[in-house]
Length: 374
Ligand code: OSB
Ligand code: MG
Image 1 (cartoon, rainbow, N blue to C red):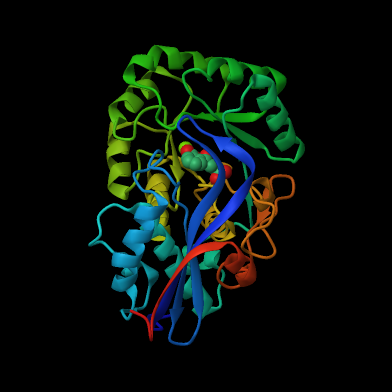
Image 2: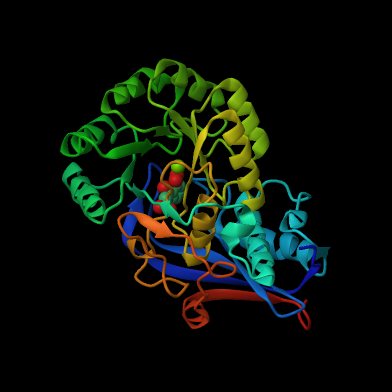
């Protein structure tokens, strides 16, 4: 258990993958994504993979793919290389402020390496108990309500038990009304990605009539007071996403009663170490959690599946099958869902090998550190 590890080589791969279906949120539209795969290698030659799943633009979080590349290559990997550690939490690079997405990719790679060297599944070393996790889908803003109904129809047919709709000022009450009347019993929730302001409070109360499971992040990340005010005035549970980047943010939100539900994203929280702590804290406080996604490739997706196996993840997570996003994934086999349920892998580490040839074929930039490199 207390084996000492030392990362002696590290590689970054900027990988570009087209999305099967373009995704529109309240702030941006995407047809392909660039994520950075992080590889950490120890003295024995064991490898752990992580994924930096930053958006290309600073609209969800302040980071971009370029800032993540800079922070990972200039600060995080040099801080990790050569250091001796016995538990992945010791590798947290606290000296670097913020930059949660960049940190998360390195943190996940360290956890996966640690699980690999112990020949245990990532889920097990995280404290996971479930053998399968329930997946929901997140649907972007569509050109018309009819297009949205078609998308919801596909996902319900595929067996997903929960659908989340992106909303914005000109795309909220009517699309939600249409989906709710077509699917009276569907587990339905909405996500505003922080687009509303305190002036919209009365407007948002209209959403209370649709029996939504939650309203996710209606207001700006730092506007916890408006979230608390809305939660006082609405029956529907308020869920925080962008507002909670650290466990300290969660403490403030709990004190203000600004949430009833927490979306835990590995990327937004800077990795699995903080994600597990947030899970434990939320469980103590009686706040239900689920695992949010950033359209991860297979590496980040499997980390999300492993995290979702912890006991407090009682709501469906955004861990839908690879095929919803990508024609082919960077892990083989890809992540699959049957009836909206994803199996937690039983093999060591991520449980699905990374397809190096496919990664190489889709890599647009690479950087290696280690013996022989600067
Ligand atoms: O708010 O959850 C969000 C994607 C990009 C930016 C923000 C968000 C999302 C998602 C994707 O909803 C969920 C998924 O990975 O399926
Ligand atoms: Mg969200």
